[in-house]
Amino acid sequence: MPTRLRGIAIALGLWLASSAVGILLYLDPNPSAPLAHEVIDYAVHIRALSYARYFGLHQPPRIERPNSHLGLIAIDENSIGSPATGPWPFPRSLYGRLLDRLAAAGAKTVAFDISFLEPSVDPRQDAAFAAGMRRVPTVLGDIVATTATGRIGVEPVTPALARASAAVGYTSVDQPGGYVIGQPPEIRTRRHGTYGGEVLRSLALTAVETYTGKSIDIAGVPTLNGRLMLLPMAAHSGLAIGHRAGAERFGSGIAGAGQLSFATAMTMPISQLRTFAAGRLILVGATAQALGDFVTTARGITPGMYVNARFIDQLMRGISITPASPILDLALILMLPLLVTLALTFLRPVIGIIASVAMLAVFTEVNLWFFVEHLYWIDLIHVGLATLLAMMLVGGYRASVEVSQRRLVTQLFGMHVSPAIVREILSTDDPRTSLGLHGKRVKTTIFYSDIRGFTAMSETMTPEQIYAQLNEYFDEMCGIIFRHNGYVDKFIGDCVMAVFSAPYQTENDARNAVISAVEQQRRISELATKWQAEGRPPFTVGMGINTGEVVMGNLGARSRMNYTVIGDNVNVAARLYNVAKGGQIIISESTYEEVRDVVTVNELEPVHVKGKTAPLRIYEIVDLKEPFATC
Image (cartoon, rainbow, N blue to C red; front, side):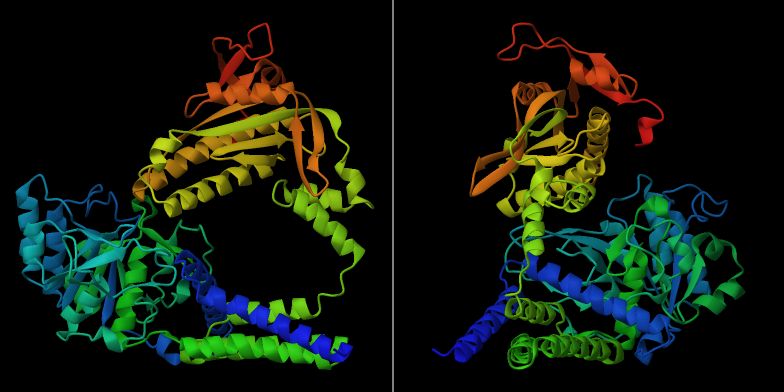
C-alpha cells in the first residue's frame, strides 16, 4: 500500500478508535460512569450560564423573570433561640401558630421542607400543628430511600400530621449524584416491596399542584433519565464548593421570590405579613448552618430549601433544561473527530492543528450558546473527549525524548508521591539519576494502616459499595500523606503502606509521619459519622509507625519495577500496625525519640518481634502537643 494511502488509513483508524471511545463512554452500562460524565458536562454548562448572566451576556429571559407567586420563610441563624421561637427543635405548636398567621395573611398554600417523621411526645403539639394545617392547605415532606437492588423505602410523615395536610411529597431521594444534576419529580416504583407499583411525587411537584389546583403531566416535562434538571440560583455565584457559612444571607437567587426569617414571620404585624404572603405558595425550611440541611449542587453547597424552591419555581413557570436526543449526541461524537482527523491528515501540520483547535473551539461556543440561550443541552464532554483524542492520536507520532523521560518519572511516582517531589525530580537534567535506581541505605520512617473488621463488614455489602467506600477512604488518606511529604508505597488489600519521605529524606520525616497519622484518624472519625448518616457501615483503623535504616530503590524486573523500601525496620512497622487496635496509633521507641516534643503518649507493654531477642518498647499516641495540634 502506498505510504500516502497507508497514512490515511491509519488516520481513519485512529478516528474510529477515538470516536469509539467517546461512544463507549457515552453508552457505558455502568451507572456510575455516565453519571460522573453527566455531572461534569452539566457543571460546565451551568458555569457557562452563570458567567453569561454575571457579565450580562446572552441569557434566557425566562430564568430571570420574577416569580411573585413564591415566598420563602427561612429558619436562619437569627431564628434559632430568638425570643419569638425559642431553642431548636421548635415545638410543633409553633408551626401551627405560623400557619395561623399565614392563613390570616392570605397565603394560598404552605409547604414545609422539614421532616416530621415521629409523633411529638406531647400529643397536644401535633394537634396544634394539625389545627393550623386545617386553616391553610399545607404540604409536608417525607423521605424516600432506595436500596442497591432498587427497592423503595419511605420514611413517612407521622400519621396524625399527614391526615391534616393537604398532600405529602418526598423532599429528596438518595440517588447517585444527589442534587448535582437534579431530582425526579415523581418515582414510579417497581411492582414489589412495601411501596411496589406506586407513584411517589416530590414535595416541589405536590406543592405546585396543591397551589394551582391542577395536576401536572410529568410526561410533558423535559427530564434527564427521569430527573428534572436543576437550574442554578444566581445569588450563589460567589459560593465555592465547601462554602456554607452565611449562605442564608444570599437568599434563594430566584427573582421575585421574597424571603423572611422565621422569627420575623412570627413577630411582624399581620398587615405587613399579608404584603409578603397573600396569594403565594410559601415554602418553609432551614438555612442555618447549625441545622446541616445543605446539599451539593453544580455551583457549590447550598441550603436544600433553596434547591426545592428552585424546583418549585421551575414547575410553576414551566422552565426546564431540555437534553438533546442521543442520536444527535452520537452523530457529533462521530463527525467532529472525523473533521479534525481530515484537517490533520490533509493540511500542513501547523495549519491542521490550528484548524482542529478552531473547530473544537467553535463547537464549544455553539454548544454553550444553545444552552445559555435556549436551555438546550448538547453533549460536550464526550464529543470534546473524542475530538481531543483524535487530535492527540493523529498527531501523536511526534514524541520527544523529554516527553518520554517525563512519562517514565510520572509512571513511577505520579501515583505515589506528592506533586512537590515530582516537580523536584523533573527539574534535574537526568531524572533516572535522581531516582537512585540502584538502591541505597537511608534512614526513613515507615507507616502502615489497616482497617479493622473489614472482612466482616464487606460480607454485608456489594462489590460496588465496597469499592466506592474504599476508594473514598484511600483518596482521603493519600491526600493527607501527600500533604505531609510522604509517598504511598503500596496498597495491600485494605492496608496502606507509606514512607516518609522518598526519594529525599529530611530531619522532620518522623514528625510528618506522626502528624499525618493523627490527622488521618481524625478524618476517619469524620468519615465514619458521614457514612453512618448515609447508611453505610463505618470502620476503624489501626496504625503502626517505625523509624530506622532501610534499603530504598527500585525493586523488581527490568520490565516491571516498584520503588519501595525493604529491611528489618519495615517488618517492625508491619508488626506494630498488627498490634494496634481500631483508632490506635502505635509507634516504636526509635520513632518516639524523634517526636517526643510533638506528641503525648502512653507506653504499652513491650512486644516481641520476629528476629529480635529483646522485646520492643512501643507507645500509643494520645494526642499532639501544641502548636502541632492544629497541623
